[in-house]
Length: 144
Image 1 (cartoon, rainbow, N blue to C red):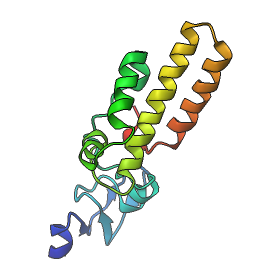
Image 2 (image 1 turned 90 degrees about the horizontal axis):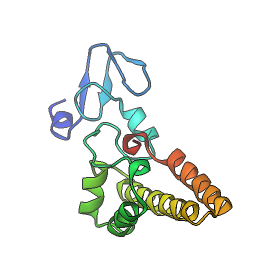
Image 3 (image 1 turned 30 degrees about the vertical axis):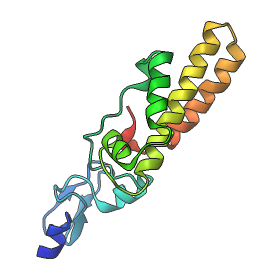
């Protein structure tokens, strides 16, 4: 048990409820962050990005202007590992992909806004559908 705890994992022998799936953990259940809040199964199901670290820096992309969205895209469309880790709040499997997906959402959202500004409603609707699809596939830990 000591070695597991040192790696950030621990086994507990109490009843706790996972905040993601709502199931009770009984007996020897591993909690990824050691806090007893989110079970390892939920983290694995979250597209590989650890949902336990909600200390991310993901802004509400829907509240940003097209210029702000394009600046976000410029920064994160090909992020360094350090940038991706800072943005999504961790280095779990898939963290760079999550950062790039957020950048793709920002670019699509900006394009939709620009289409609406020039009265291209059909184009805007296409990019808004793309945004919905990207958002649907984002890990829960990076959604706003």
